[in-house]
Length: 110
Image 1 (cartoon, one colour):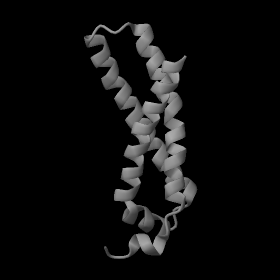
Image 2 (image 1 turned 90 degrees about the vertical axis):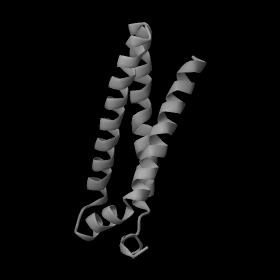
Image 3 (image 1 turned 180 degrees about the horizontal axis):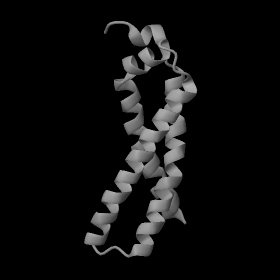
Image 4 (image 1 turned 120 degrees about the vertical axis):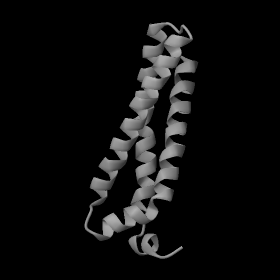
């Protein structure tokens, strides 16, 4: 059971770091979308869709590599389930950063 929590934690942290970096790098873009009338909910759904896409592509690549390394299919399925559990948690944390985004500061020249 201890490995279960470690897997979810590592998957969540990896995706969370990626999403936080994405929000930081695209701050001006998100600010412009908010200035043009996009709601916070729309931006959160977009962030969640990107996180879901990244998770599924990661699972696909990891599955191919796992099969190539002869990892049992049941173990791969369990690990995939754990990754999918961690994905919503990391999306929530990243969307909190998005909620604190101030439109004026995001659009200001660097």
